[in-house]
Length: 191
Image 1 (cartoon, rainbow, N blue to C red):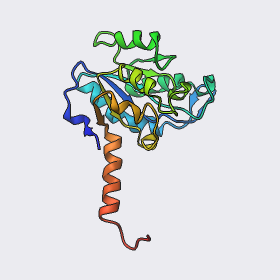
Image 2: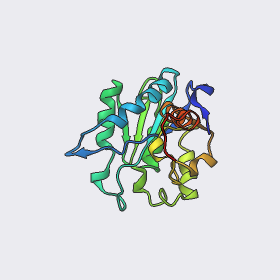
Image 3: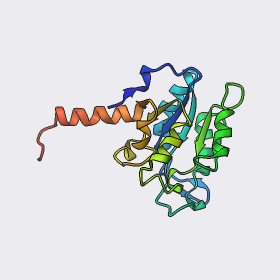
Image 4: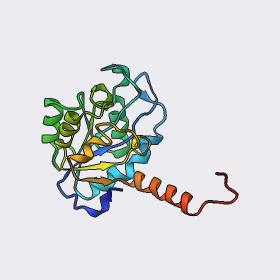
């Protein structure tokens, strides 16, 4: 298990955070924001400690770039929850995302959401090249996408080979639940 995000100084640190924003979207509107809300404690903690947040997630199972699977509506929705601007990068890696990340500061904006990780063919293939490129975007990596953490993808597993990694609060909470359930199972239980 990765160390906790509580174990690192986050002041002025660019934190690349893998979240699970695989949420239903219709006509550009998020229909159920439960997964977004569950990520807020980790995001707010990073911001409260003076860090900058670079979020990445998948949405659906697109076959290449498909606008109906864009995370742009999620950035708009997340801005409302955070009461601050969330910049959106229409690419996962490349000059636009790099420029937005370079612009992170206390005086401008502190949160960026990158475009759908699955728009890049290397994501589901756990591409070493993509994992290395993603690792260059931040100074540390925070895994907070419990629902996707079992996948051997570049943004969930591959990246951990190239950047210091930590768990976010949602991931920690789920680990505690699993540990409790297996260590102290409720009776009666089935095998």
